[in-house]
Image (tube, rainbow, N blue to C red):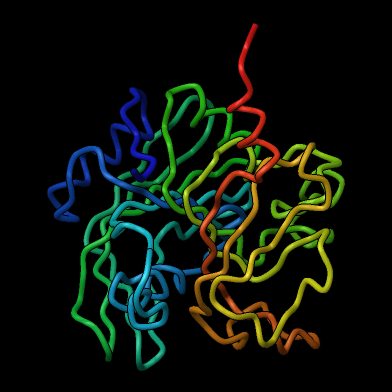
Length: 263
């Protein structure tokens, strides 16, 4: 079963208010894009038909119509996510500014058009906060995410993450929002920890194991590549840094620990 929010709070309320626009259930699977910047690309990359076309048969995420975009520096005076490159268009239909506690937020209703797939309505809640602050908000209202997106997640000093922390750090040396949010699916372009972390020929079904399963309780089963490395912000030699889809599942150590009898 997918992680579906049944909590109560401003994130949940924005999702529920979006349901008529997105054509999804009031409590339905959602996605979070950490350190999102002004990137609109993931709205088209995560189109359900695009994911199915890339992944073929087998499990894929549930269709998502509601997204949360989190970034401590954005929006820079322009909360809209309008975008057009000749093949994809993201057009704003409605925008509402609101506050979530001390954080500025914008609730957007968008139309995403593509030259390959039928247009669809999506909603995005943009929150101007750090990744850590958002996780605290989500956990406080028992809001869950089905998909987590960590493309260009602000590590290695470029996004101002605490101690240059990588959200997909599988070393187990530090807590990550990925561990705390416990998504069913991960969409990312990199991992930190296991090596080699850039595999050009990664096959479907291959598993990315953490360095220390006793300290890091998730592993990631590769399903498919969703996009090539040529997107804004990539480059600098990262010619194998594909945006890839992974299914998150507990490591065998954590499964065994849960199954052990209790005194």
